[in-house]
Amino acid sequence: MNSATNSCSSEEKEVLFHPELLQKFDINGPRYTSYPSADRFHNDFSEADYLGALKRVAKANEPLSLYFHLPFCPNICYYCGCNKIITKDHGRSAKYIKYLAKEMAMVCNAMGAQKRIPITQLHWGGGTPTFLSHEEMIELMQHTREHFDLLPGGEYSIEIDPRRVTEKDIALLAELGFNRISLGVQDFNLAVQEAVHRVQTIEETQAVMDWSRKYGFTSRSVDLIYGLPKQTPETFKETVDAVLAMSPDRLSVYNYAHLPHIFKPQRRISEADLPPAADKLNILSNTIEHLTEAGYVFIGMDHFAKPDDELAIAQKEGKLHRNFQGYSTQAECDLLAFGISSIGKVDDCYSQNVRTLDEYYESLDHGHLPVLRGMQLDQDDLLRRELIGELMCQFALNTQTFAKDYQLDFSNYFKTEIEELKGLEEAGLLEWQGSNMQVPIKGRLLARRVAMTFDRHLRESQAKGTYSKVL
Image 1: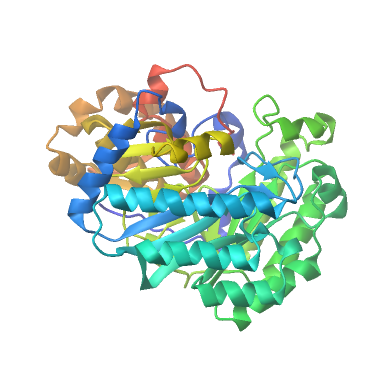
Image 2: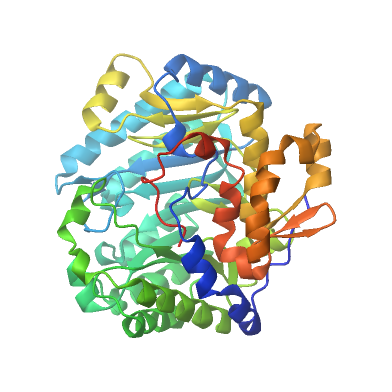
């Protein structure tokens, strides 16, 4: 596929940020960490379907990716929409580790693995993965290595809560094989932190950054959220300046999605404290300006990276991918997911586990994989997944090459979509250069809106209210 140039110089920043377009096209829509999006999964997808997909992947004998959902948190953050369990009881996490081992063994047995399965990517997410004690971390990694071979040069990452780690924790994580960390920051302003029940100092965060460099981690990522209560353009600028001083390799700047009817903890946030739309746009504009002036490249959606970071290089070379953890440099490898609510991508299927501990334990105790729902993709889903992935990662699609790969007449197959694209084209979100469809710089903050045009499932459904805003 033909990739687009992705550099964002300070001059291009003015072109990237168009408030009138953002206001016009800021509607609800999927984030496209998968296509079809997870809300299309259904309960007709069974354990038998998942087992079939595992057997098909086993025959390919290609390196895989692993995800472990570690849901435990000692305290609640009001903005959080993750599947989490608030507890201080390590007896609960110790039991969970043993069941993760059981699930791994069952999956590898279903795959007929005679030796350890090669792995190029591993991620511990949550919840708060660093809730685990040292003994629990060691035990989980030992179980993992019993079944899987973590190959040299792979991406082995973990989400960190800087408030609750010590230098010994970071040293252990490095010893266990982790080489990347993602730090939750959200905002350094105390009033904002108190409003979302997450107080975290710059000093705590800087210490983790320093330790990660000391113990040889190759990449540091920081997560920020704009649109939180009590935020102003001025206070968020101070947060961005503080983060830039730490020089992370990557930053994610997420838009806060206030959905209290779905995420109960958000009911503790007063809507009157949320910044008005104009302030949110100013925050976004200022942040883009600061990051691009500091030399960071806009990767897409809400991600930025240094020019020499693997994400930026992969995008420039047309090798960027997108999965449930966001943007990735790894090839489109299959993903095995373990733990409650985790989502895997295996062959032509998505599979999601049950959401509660009781269901998870009961299923495994009865010798069944804890499949709640999922989806087997048809040919139309597969080709649209490829198309949307190219738009989200490369901001471009060579329709001639695409049509040849899938043996179809592009203009006929996507007749409805091409007609709908005309409005986006007139607004400047899309350009055609011969057979090459491109999202120009002024439309890249809204690439998700362009991708929505090709989402057949979204077209067939009116249930758009469960999505976050595009910005």
